[in-house]
Figure (cartoon, one colour):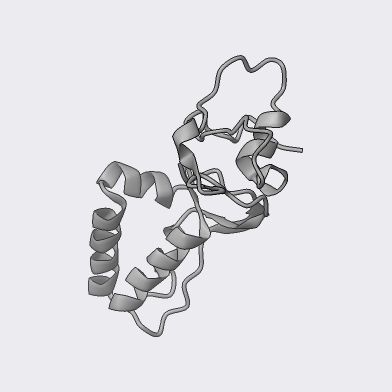
Length: 144
């Protein structure tokens, strides 16, 4: 059901079967279906569970993921706006290296980050339709 080659080892799994939310938790379902060949993975610690809830709960649902941000510049006519967008995105994403990993699709973009990128583009080019290089439905393994 899951492509374990796409799931980063730093993305925490949850082995807690007696949790009230285990049936709908992506972290738990991935953990329970992990193939035998994997002997180690990052796990959620017990201090995440309190008051019947979990700080690391992630609902098991597919979302629209994006890959690549080169296309966001296609409809931006102003050279100055393109430059401002690139500068703002680089600052928002943390570094030039990270910016280029997103630009060329090495890192996937979850819905929250997609909206942040759209907001940054609209700050400098308000009337531009923002398109990502590729979008697809998948589980979100981008967050901790």
